[in-house]
Length: 214
Image 1 (cartoon, rainbow, N blue to C red):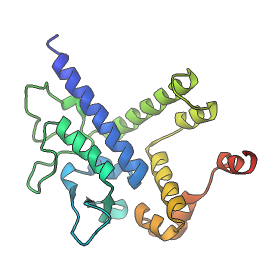
Image 2 (cartoon, rainbow, N blue to C red; image 1 turned 120 degrees about the horizontal axis):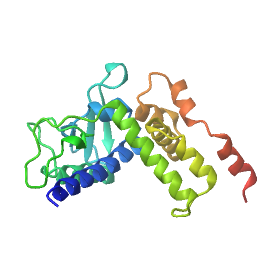
Image 3 (cartoon, one colour; image 1 turned 120 degrees about the vertical axis):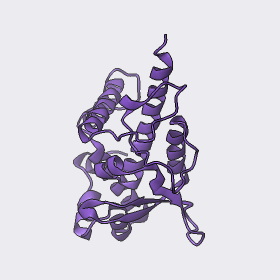
Image 4 (cartoon, helix red, strand yellow; image 1 turned 90 degrees about the horizontal axis):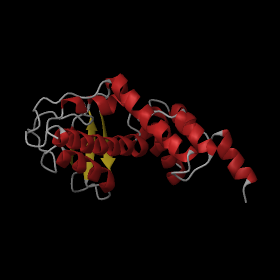
């Protein structure tokens, strides 16, 4: 029983971390490196003249080591707050706080009676890959077993899914919502709009849905 507080806290952090990963990749189109190399202090209040968003995410080392800033929807910021609070941190970041990673390695999580270490390491690339594979495979199993709604096609997609698949989903979602590849290019931080267009392409199954379903 002595290990139970430690296990409970680690599980809570794992769940909060996953919700944040899904939000950042599936909504903001985050790359793996954005998540692994980023810190919770990279989120900051938006300037008052930016009316539609109250928070920004600064990504100092995007692809090609180019910095970028993305507006953050309130519900995504709620995921940031949830992880911070679960880690025992203040709900909102401060400029001088230790560099807590967006995607902490839960092997270093201590029991609930101890403060979080100030130099908590991020999960490795291979660790994040395995974690997401496990999540997607569990979802596929839940569909196949009837525990969760979905088709066998959905289960097959999930078994082949990855973090990059979530980024693809974000790009397609923003393209459908805005009908504007230029906006999608800003979200994807692409050098060329031709690259954005590839992300916006529909799959064969989506074409079949459009043509064959009432």
